[in-house]
Length: 351
Ligand code: SF4
Ligand code: SF4
Image 1 (cartoon, rainbow, N blue to C red):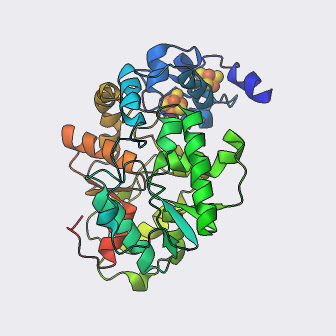
Image 2 (cartoon, protein in one colour; image 1 turned 180 degrees about the vertical axis):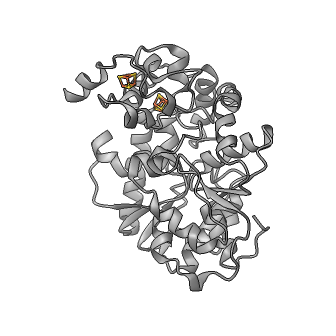
């Protein structure tokens, strides 16, 4: 009731507009009017809500429009192609490459790989994350029945029912393995949905839901670091961590331990400007191209002079790297798990 009241109370004052990664091309008020292109491009980052005096939940209302079919045509086609394979990109996880890590064993945590993790471009990142967790003494297992967390099906493909089916199965696998909790890899879409599957989808369970980055921040100590990251490093907050889950300090705590030269760039924390890739934008070739000019210019400006932009989401990494390459941002982009593994001495190419 309150939600509906708030959803319909946008007065188009545009006080929230400059927080939107797509501003001035699109504004949240256009999304509240249901304008197709504005809806399709919404990343559901939730930044507009922080700037709205009425707290209009633009991202939630926009999501409902997406669920009713207002998603880009190329995303719809991609969704049909990947349906059969049952993974975000239609690529199966290469379990052989993860040899040496516990698989289908009893453990404290069941790791949920992110939707990007099976991609060849993310494989090293995922391996580095698992290696880091193991070195820090985290008791975890993977499961061949859980190739990813499927959060992208909820937020990007806007198909809550498909996600629900997969989530119920994951919870069943977790119970059978006797784990106490689900440990999320570095995936913004999983961060957004997994901590609230009960409120969003009425799925009841008693498992803990934890983010790998948060667990690393609790366990990492300066004594674990054998070489510090020497390059000027800054951090981009994924919306799923910062705005959806208030997790802004743990990644910074890690970076301050492993970097010699950490520098904060504004806006940061819960005010961070979205990478522009959520809500299906990074999966839709057409919208990703448009995001380069509309969003990329601002991100490149924000991180001017930085050598490494660290982040805790594969999707953010993919968008920021695209911007840096196409707009000559001059920075490299790495996931935190990779940077920690390198600083702890894992033989990896230097970041
Ligand atoms: S992209 Fe983010 S800031 Fe812009 S309307 Fe959507 S949720 Fe709001
Ligand atoms: S969402 Fe809020 S701040 Fe943005 S235009 Fe509507 S009323 Fe104004």
